[in-house]
Amino acid sequence: MTDEPHPAEFEDINEAVSDEWKSETTPYERVRHVIAHTYSAVSAETVAEDAQTSPKTARKHLNLLADEGFVVTATGEHGGTIYRRSPESLVVEQAADILEHVSTDELSTRIAEMREQLNDFRAEHGVDSPEELSIKQTNQTLSEAGSNQSEIDSETLQEWQTTRRNLAFANAALSIANAERFVDGDSRTTDDGVPV
Image (cartoon, rainbow, N blue to C red):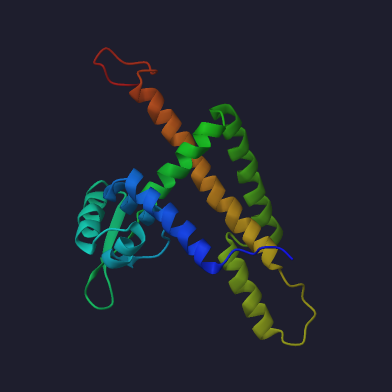
């Protein structure tokens, strides 16, 4: 017979990890971490609970993050402010991650491959997007109830959507890499000091 840990032991471990996180980070860092990993709009109170701080402190830091462009705000159902990660900050984070792991030459090659794959999807299915394909398929199903049409599997739709999303991130990463070259002075300038 093995000695299985008592549930209270797990609670102690969770509490210890939580206490360590709180002692090693600032409220701002915890609020930023929580909102960075929250994928729907939430209240300051919800963030405060997860970030182990007061709602007032969470609200203060969320508003700072909104000023920095990391967070966007909206009005919730009951009139209170809700917060979520800004799409721009997600794109920049993804682009930075790509640039950390992939050279710009390799990135250019991958972008060309993804564009070709998207063109293949369009040519094969006769529509411009996976959403249009779903609508087309639904309309065919409704109008041809007894026909034996081939149904597009969800994996194809998901692959199309994923490729399109990955292409957008890759394009953003390449644009950032090109912009950084200009910021770093790796561009030719005219006599007036304007980049060419």
